[in-house]
Length: 510
Image (cartoon, rainbow, N blue to C red; front, top):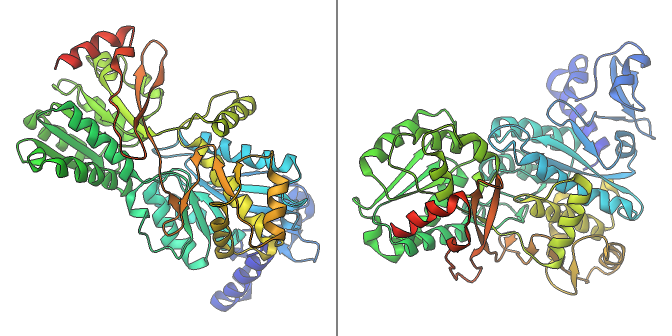
């Protein structure tokens, strides 16, 4: 759907609903005005029309204002270029506030890197690619209005995001699905997305947590601990990963999950939730040997702090807590913080070490001055997948359709192997546009993008183990802990030196 079509549809709906006098308010145009000079702050090309700052198109129609408080970032092209049809506009829903605010900006940088690379080599057949990036707030209540702006007002046909699984599902069901808009998440890992009725419109480059659940369960089984607790936030991510762990752990031996050996509790996704305190009370009575905590950053920090004064000092954390700032939030803030941090073992979908990832990592660091983090490669790949699909259609920006874009993704999983990036960009998109039978096999920075076309997700992935290094003040990898084929490799704690070495010696003797 084009920007102009979206604006005209909104105008028509407004006329039907409330009449002419209120219609200008229904469109997300700029500020009220009396003359053109008052529209300068809105951006290049804005004029005052019928009391509002608007951006006229070449045909004289009015283009809705792209940016607003929720969707404040536009990169790759200017509003004037987008409104004139000189750029392909893709939406992004990323966590810039809320529990995953530490991840969203880094993921956005990976998206921007992909777009800037393509634009530097000519874009899509001479037209630029632009991203309108919105804050999903790690909360459906924030993400849905932002998605409505992207889809209902601006009229994008594809969205990269959201970041959290639960938010992705709610946005898709509430806004995107009925409008036929493609969504592709770089980080939504909940198993419930696999069977989501999505009409082929919901995709992800991140793997399902059914794999990460198998990794954690295998690690628990290898430890042979007598009493295990699994605590998770109550959302699609937390519930799904908890279920995946229990499926393997309890399935290995039903006695593993007997009442006196296993405890599972959930808490509300608010980091100040009283559910966390209630869970701590029950854990004190249960006295687990090890606790699996499935959380995001803020609620995970809050929970770890509540363990002060208890016997709980051995945790398995998941990808939601793989952040070096955890060290600063915990170290010295509670008694025995070093022991707690040093004994933590975490899991996360593994970043590959192949050529495609290394090339991405170097380009990311060159552009942003920092190394990529969790799911950054997946975001880079998701953006490229959408751009390849748009290019394969060979349509003008105002002719795009989410279902058509989704159909083109099916041409990207088989054929000549192409590394994601610009080295083969122009030749690949020309082949896809000129020969509708042509297919390519895109190898992403995050790994082989071998999508299961029935579910819209990668067929396989490895899971990496990680720990906190207090001397480096950073997250350090144990390497692959669980392969895509289901082979478990115990973390090599013998490699640990420095302050944490003595704590792991104690763990090995437990």
